Each structure stands twice: as structure tokens, then as C-alpha cells.
Image (tube, rainbow, N blue to C red):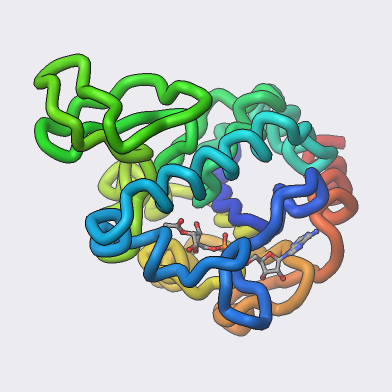
Length: 229
Ligand code: OAD
């Protein structure tokens, strides 16, 4: 059975209508990343940060999984492959496409987190700075998103799976944010074959053994069909 670790980024959800992060103007949905994706930005203006993620949650809920998400779910269901799907995305499109062995390394729009006691619970559609933690009653509720300067989730498990994989595939990510951007080198050092599927060459494109460039909704189903004939 072939062991495959797959990393996805914003590019896989682009054709579902969810905008990617790195527009040429350096803004994310008209906001500076420092304002909406750092603990310092949240401390400065929690109202703005909640409004921002409330809008992202609504957009993600209105979007539908596309052919690339569906192809990865089909690959996982194939008994000839053991798939670990690691996503940097905070939308829920992989899960809604049917992927189960899924790790959200940058958290989820659909989770709430107490900044005081670390309790997690399902996020309501609309979150407010005055929302109380169900465990400690503090009003320090934040989206369960990993912001810049914070440690991504599941790292030990991901690195162990990477080292033991036969193939590492990176899909729809620009390769700008570590530690995910370093997975190709981690895999390469362990002798794992590496493949990039992305619209354009990523920052680390030369580190991959093979790369194909084009739309995720075309490349991913084609690749899955090749390895699951
Ligand atoms: P980026 O916005 O940096 O990169 C998206 C990548 O997807 C680019 O390389 C595009 O070329 C590619 N792309 C765009 N449309 C595509 C399509 N239809 N098919 C295939 N590829 C396409 O997004 P990420 O790499 O995911 O972190 O960003 C990484 C992290 O930075 C995010 O998880 C987020 C962000 O700040 C946090 O929120 C913590």
C-alpha cells in the first residue's frame, strides 16, 4: 500500500470561489495580514478580527467543494493508498467532499478557542468579542485559527508521516509560510518522492522531483486517475 502525504493550500479552494491570501497588493480581503492574522492584531481590535473571520466563515459556508477536493476524497477511499491530508486551509471543503484522514494545521473557521483556558468548542455563525467561554466564563473568545507567530497543529504527527511516506504532494500553496513550506525539503531529506501541483511554480518549486502547473480542478483529478486507474 502506497503511503501518500498531501499538503493543500488556498489554491485548491480558489475555484470554489474562496480567495487566496497573497494578492499582488499584499492584502488579504483588503486587510493587512498583521491586523487580522496575528495575536497582536486581535489584541488591538478584536471587533475587527471577529468581523473579518465571521465574513470568511459565511463565505466558506456558501462555497461548495470542487473536483479537486472530491478527487482527494476518492483517493483516500481507494484501498491501495494510505492518505494523510494536511491542509493549511481554514475552510471545511475537504471534509465536505468526504476526506476523513484530515488535519487542519492552521485551525478552522468553524472552531472557537478561549485565549485564557484553551477550551475549544464549535464556532457559532457569528462570533463577538463578548462571547463567553463555556468552561471558564472569560470573554476572550477567538477564532480557532493559527495566526502568525503561533505553532501550527499536529506537527509531530505530520513530520512522522512525512518521513514514512512514499510520496509527498503539495497542491495549491505558494510555499511562503513555514513550517508547511519546508515539508518538501523534509520529505526530500528522507528520500520521499515529491510532486507539486500548482497554478504557477511555487517559491520552492525547484525542490520538488516533479511539478505540474495548471488549475487544481484539472490537475488533481488527472493525477488521481493516473495513480488509481
Ligand atoms: P497563497 O495565497 O499564498 O498561495 C496560493 C497558491 O495557489 C499560489 O501559489 C497560486 O499560484 C495557487 N493557485 C491559485 N489558484 C489556483 C488554482 N485554481 N489551482 C491551483 N493552484 C492555484 O496561499 P497558501 O499557500 O495556502 O495562514 O498560504 C499559506 C498560509 O498563509 C495560509 O494558510 C494562511 C496564510 O497567511 C494562516 O492563516 C495562518
